[in-house]
Amino acid sequence: MYPFARLLALTLAEKRKPRLGILDTHHLGLTCLPWDIDGFFEMNNGRILTLYDLGRFGLSIRTGLWDALKRERWGLVVAGSSVRYRARIRPLQRFDLRTRLVGWDDKFFYIEQAMVRGETVCNHALLRTGVTEKGRLTDPLRVADALGVDRASPPLPDWAENWAEADRTRPWPPQI
Image 1 (tube, helix red, strand yellow):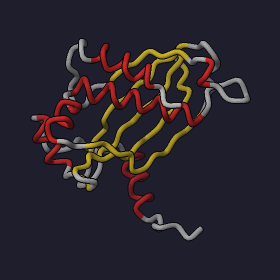
Image 2 (image 1 turned 180 degrees about the vertical axis):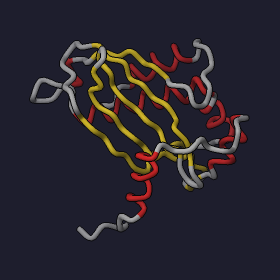
Image 3 (image 1 turned 90 degrees about the horizontal axis):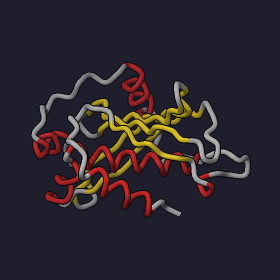
């Protein structure tokens, strides 16, 4: 089940916090709850992706994107992701969910997320996301204008650009 209670608590808390710059890192302290685990007594990989949603919500609220989404009647979509899982998160362990926008291209925004426990990065993701209007992607430059930020994206890290380029060569629809 989607963590609606966590989302509500996050929304109320984040609205009271100071604004973040568009490229700042959002931090969200979380605990692995009993309903987050799988049969191996660790956080389920699907739940990790769901909790990443909370980090993106928090970032959008703190950067002002949430207000622009409501004002313009825009939506958000995840168009692709690459995730590395490296260390288990066990029940009742606390961790820091970090989320930051790394840049954008002519269609998509690229967001980096990680769950960090102490000095250990437990998992890390790169997501290609979009802002939608009436079911279609909105030009990232319109979004930048709505947020009052520089239209020029910072250069994407090489590893992010390489992933995006490799994914563009992937056939769609797949022949499976």
